[in-house]
Length: 319
Image (cartoon, rainbow, N blue to C red):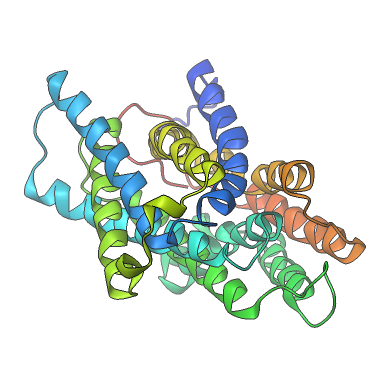
């Protein structure tokens, strides 16, 4: 079978989607920090994703998109619980004690986890799919940068909260697992319908988790600040409806190596906004750690050896 050597041009829609997750997701870290100042974190995540999911699901069904099957719902629930209840929920919980800029850098560990999870799962038994030694060097370097970031020493006025940092790393692990699972999951053919289902499932999961952790007793609507409310509404519209929808669509419509580049653009945006709008302090040690982490992510992204890069309208892109 003759190999097709013709380069595939990336559509403008893909670049627009990438731009949305570059800018919007970079800004959501600050929005989350503002929102959780006066709103319990897991309930904030649950309600905003559930609202966005119902809106998106209803919109797609009213447009005539076929109803999903039970298997579709099961797959969407797994993705939603991993990405939103686990990943997004832990990020929001950790931002009660960890600055948004540091949060973005720790969440940047997602590509590091993805390489490790693929390796542990045996995906790389096929030599053609194995990443190069440079990619594994990038993983080790990236976790070294994380150790520098959260290790003993002063990063700003206070050290990074170790429990918050651990929650962020575990949340990044869950996000990576959910992203990998979605590549082969039995999701609906319509990416937006599937996104709505994931938002609903992930939102409900976070609400349940909020109930388990006692957050219902912490709700005080009269105490919700204007800044928290603005952050909450921004997260519904841009974080969930626009940003998450773009991400799940890109996982199907663009090369995974391109989609994963958001991991080292988001922290740059988050650091800039944290300093500009939240008076967060950036120290030389933090800058060095940021350079190490982002360089490692870039190294992993551009040295992983795809078995077959394909861009297709329906179906998960495999790398």
